[in-house]
Image (cartoon, rainbow, N blue to C red; front, top):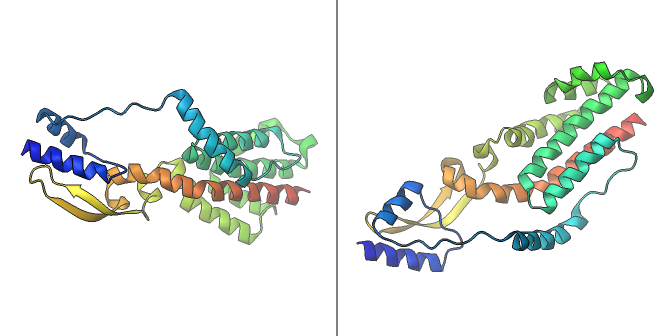
Length: 236
């Protein structure tokens, strides 16, 4: 049986770009003497070269830095760009939501203070402790957001911001289905082709999330950029 399983796995591996094994099953197969080659991780130089190629392709699609930004907001833009250049798309999405939330709080704080020159640093403490939803409503009350933008922000909060900030991986990957997966029963040697919904399988969720991150990252960053420019225009 051991030899049969080994041969089946070798055949499946030839046509597979990705193999997922339950850790317990992996240990069981190792105890049976089935060898597993250890594929070395990319070197730092190899990793940087891969990122460099991808970054050059992606850079023209990123929003340009708006003029006249406060240093704190400008720093967030730069951090998001660097995350994207290095392939940290999940982090870039989280940072984009932080850019939106911080910008809303900052502009509301300045508006309520009557301008930068009148701003009292002690009054900023209230904004630091404020949740995102109350911050949106506070900006709406200060006439910084119209009803349509406020609606879009609340939608973003529930569909992107909260799942990513709280790492709700099941919600993030709920629409992904791994199709025509060849599933091997290591006890019987049977191979079955199945469709697996990521929402119902934690191992598929882990594999699926990077694809969702890459799918969302540019649209999320562009939305954050849109919100910042919208707020700056309202300030003027």
